[in-house]
Image 1 (tube, rainbow, N blue to C red):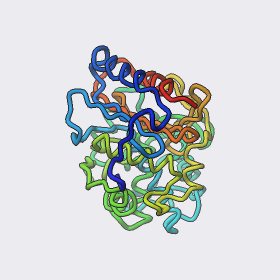
Image 2 (cartoon, one colour):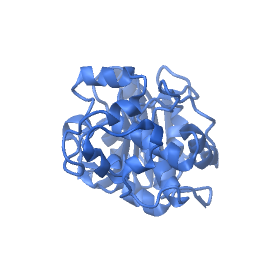
Image 3 (tube, rainbow, N blue to C red):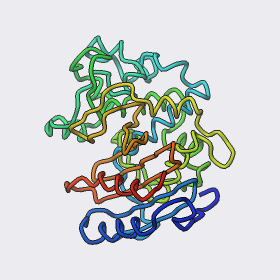
Length: 322
């Protein structure tokens, strides 16, 4: 990290070392799909364990990518590339994409796509639609061709396509490739080397998922959040954006992540009485930030169907005395 991973014994940050050791032992013996557990408090790393991977091994962080894109939207807004979140997204897309087929698309705003309330169909629970989206020669054009499932602003529907459209709007508004904009505004300042970021058939980085980052780099993102957008004394992302992104704007899909609130591509909850902000991805990818505790927990897992291990974060919380 900027202060390159300063470590601290658990006792130095008021943590119970025995509980943390017991948790790591439990993961090693009972949770074969977990690949890493990292915990930092007050900016200092108190545990860093890897299971079947090396510390520098890049992990497919799946939909944690969406939460990184949220930070890029905040950076773009701060730089004047967007005027406000209620801009219609169609006005921010290149004209060659053509017209959306459902007239209600004209009412879809940046805010709707950030909160998953644009009415864009959800790929979850619809394998045929998900496969068609993934296989499309142009997933953005494919998404714009879909009829909305409800009026914009009416209901939460988790949608990869909606976030990919948001990524296309970012690219057009900034005049920069999404990965290049991310590198300049977020990754390089955080000390993160250019990550592998898969692209669609049109060459666009997948805004909805697929970033490959080592767990230590995920921890940097979590520490940036815990510091309200400040890194090494510089405000990389506006504090107002961090506050807005992590505040629940709509009720989340409880059946999905069991996290009750959804902000701007970040989940929110209260756990053991503590406010929690989450970036999550399929297969058990987690960046969990507990701002009042100055605590960040990162977990990664194999990208396959396996039991959810988010509850292990509650065990981490139990190791920290308030």
